[in-house]
Each structure stands twice: as C-alpha cells, then as structure tokens.
Length: 332
Image 1: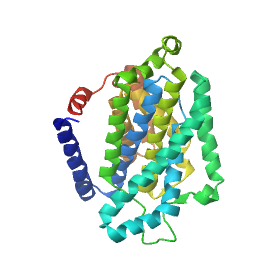
Image 2: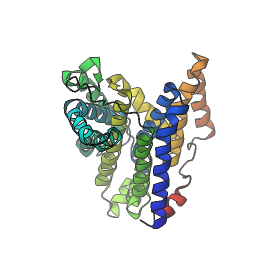
Image 3: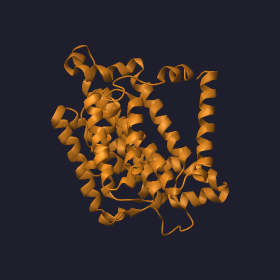
C-alpha cells in the first residue's frame, strides 16, 4: 500500500477512535443504539449487494446467515470466550483485552455463516430467479425453526450473551469505532472484489449467465463465491448485533428482516455499494426518528418507499458510486 494509503488508514483509525470517545458523551443511550444498528445494517446491506446487485441473483434469506453468525458467536462467547476474556484481562489492560478477544467472536460468527453459505449455495445457486428466492427463503426459515429447538442457545426463550460461570466477564460490547471499522472493512473488501479485473466475472454473470459461461466464466463457481463472501459478512453483522444487544432471539431474523435488507439494496440501487450504505442508514434511522408521530410513522415510512420507487425506479444511485475513485487512488 502506498504512503497516502497508510495516511488514509491512520486518519480512519483516528476518526473511529474519536467516535468511541465522543459519541457516548453526546448521545443518549437510545440514539447510541440507533447509530450502532445503522452500522450493522450497512454491513448486512453491502454484503447482500454483492449477491443481488453485482451477481444478479435474487436472495431473500440473508437474515438466516445473520442468525447463524449471531447465535454461533454468542454461544462461542458464553461457553468458550468468557474464560479467554478473563485470561486476557489478567495480563492486559481492560480495553486491550477486549480488543484482543472480540475479533475471535466476530470471526467465529462469520466463518460459521460462510460455511452455511457454502452448504446452501452449492445446490441452491444452480437455480435462478424465483426458484432461488424460494430456496434462500426456505433456508432462512429452516435455520430459524432449528434454533427454536436448540436448548443450548435458549430455544424459544432467546439467548442472553452472559456467562453464568464467569460473572466477571462482560461479554456485551457496544463499540462505535469497532462497528464502523467492520463496516469500512466490508465496504473496502466488497469494492475491491467487484471493481478489480476479476470482479468482471460477477457482472458478466449478472448481465447474461449463458453468454458468460460461453466465454469461459465459471458461472456457478462465481455465484457460490459471491454467496460465501456475502454470508461471511452477514455472519459478522449478526455477531455484532448479538454482542451489542446482549440478547438474541429468532424474531430478530425473521422474514421481515430479510425483506428489509432487500429493500436497502433495491432502493439504494442494484450495483451501487454507496447506494446500499445510504439506503441502510436512512431506512434504519427513519422509523426511529419518526417514532414521535405514533402510528403515522409507518404510514409515512411506507409512502417514502412508494414515492422513491415511482420517482427513482433504478434506486437512489442506480449503478453509480460516490467517492470510490478517491478511495481507490488512496488505497493504491
């Protein structure tokens, strides 16, 4: 990476550190929670954009992979990680101990979701259109129902991210800098993946799968790769959700959550990473900011979606990106 790239990374690190220090002082807990949820929604929406926007598939079961990441990372923290966190805290200052531990919990959730994406993607991505949508939706429901019958993660009661054997280990984590650092990494990885020369394969499959296969593009492999990468980041988003909320329940990953993520991608613009970011931020904050209007807030929210689709059927940005040329120059 060039010198200017390192300067950019350092500047981003300073901004994220400032978020951790300043936001808890200027925001009450309610708005702080909204800010955290926006970051998690951005991660999930950008990852789904890789599948739906750039590869041209129609997945509506993305919340299922978030559920896998959330429950696996929560179980990892409760049954394994709590002891590790206490061991780290015995030799490191508190903040450093948490910095050393939490990437493990996020990685556990991400890897578990990626494995689930591989298992589902290999057979499902041989399907197209509505059949693929039904298959991914079915997977999400299978995961949700299966979790409801696993007592080790609370079953229908939900699962609290707290270890009874290690009461001194605080497993809940609400780091603004961490959430948005992961969001930034997600954006950079997906953008480098789709806007590199190899990324042409994703867009070739999106435009015409048969024509892409005729010139040697392994269409099924490309779709599975996109599915696995998207599943990994969805799992990381689920892990962040579990540790920021301190409690997970399958209701948080029902069909409406998957549908919400699809709305982020479509309204932002299929094939626009920054469009997905903007839509996720606005549509996550809007219902909460309109809460003072009572029952009318969901009416206004629905009208906003309808007007947007009528005025901008291609989404907010279509396939355009904001600021990516500058980012690519900085990161070499």
